Image 1 (tube, rainbow, N blue to C red):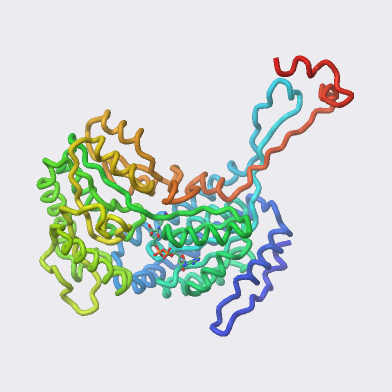
Image 2 (spheres, rainbow, N blue to C red):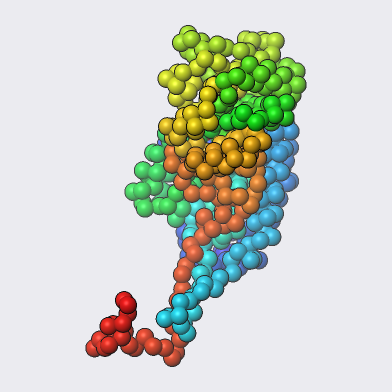
Length: 478
Ligand code: NAD
């Protein structure tokens, strides 16, 4: 039945872009014609998603790198190719098991009826994507949504025009627009996209825009998965081995030049260890990146506007009394147009500085001293719930205390970022850092309706509950 949509021609606007509302109608009609796609057809779609990436690896890397003005190839191989291909493979391998109806225990008084949960696709899933991991954040939700039997519409970011255009072309090459389509455009198109009556909408981006997207979706009562940002703290415990932890923290901060939703935003460090911490983190950063400008393994800041904002954050903090520790020889930009920004550690910062109020999203690390662990925990709990939290140390009781008395989207103990790469752990924020989660089976579940079904037995005692009511009600609540 789906075959007939192979001949669908999607209309385009004057700029040659497909019209999102029209694609949604086409996808809805296609979904209505095949509401419970077979495991085989879902696998076949995932095979095409896999091929879309695997056949075009170099083109994908080139496009993303062009958008960033230089992005570390190795980072892209890991986060834009490997993680995506691995997730598609996992969804493909497991979907047969995940889509099977699951028996649920039936209480004694409802026997001999039986109960089950039937996973069913929701329909059309929309996905609004940020610029910082453009391929991963477009295709990971898409893989889970396709595995769960949905149709998918993707709106990539206007800040990655080369990749967005490539993805639109590849989508048209590997997919019927009735199955998966990419809608290009800027903020206006994103806003219109968010207002479409999807069956589910995924938004990955800032908390500010996430709030607007949630409001737009609420008008349609479209359920949302909001993958947002925030300030993720790293706690250095008294018991921390700095020689071991500093390189891990520096890696988490400087990967993608800090432009990672789960990047450690600031560090809380025992007061007596601040000097050692600064020395170890600086040494670790310089060991990874002997130089920053021109270093092909270090990623550029996405745009001039973002670069200027980060520089301004440092200047403002300095003017307000912060101590600025610049790493690398090239304190200022050595080449015209180069946006590889040397990292900056900031000491003596106060909570009212912009660098402590806004998500940093760049290679700046405020270092805040604490006197007691309770103080560090209170500092975190006075703020919005972070997307990630990192704890470095050996003392298990302190670790447990932090885990039990803070709430965050996820945690990596004794390293940074890695919980987000573990595909069997649900990934998502809490409160201001997001709603809902995906990855692995949690992705499949996020884009499925778990339909509860109770099957009544032919012979049962339910006649006792029909009027005229009898004595059974006298004993019910005892
Ligand atoms: P952003 O919120 O500025 O933009 C994200 C997307 O929203 C873009 O595609 C944009 O076109 C679209 N958009 C902009 N205005 C819109 C509107 N009014 N209605 C609908 N859509 C609109 O975010 P960004 O700068 O691209 O990305 C950085 C942010 O994303 C950071 O806050 C980061 O923490 C967050 N992030 C979160 C995750 C996560 O998984 N939780 C992952 C990556 C990035």
